[in-house]
Image (tube, rainbow, N blue to C red; front, side, top):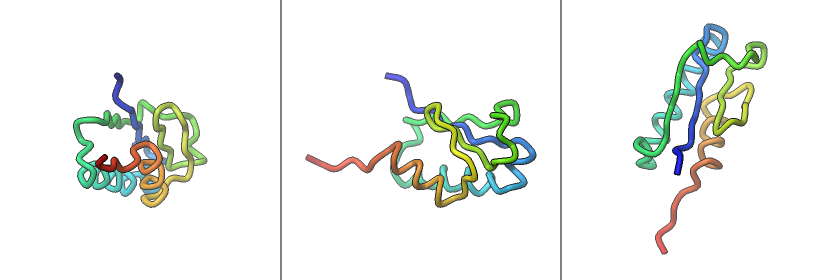
Length: 87
């Protein structure tokens, strides 16, 4: 089974609009949930989605999210990785 993929654009526009904080929120969430080995996080300006005016942009499993801040990132991650409950 393929790992979920999260792309956090670090192009100049998204970075200037706060995607550095979005990245920090993502890393914090993955640490809290023990997901570091289950998620591929791919960063880079070369991954620009062409939605610079709508940034910060994050792509989670192929779905583009616009105007993402740290709280929106947490919401995206909550949907993508619901908390596992013991049986």
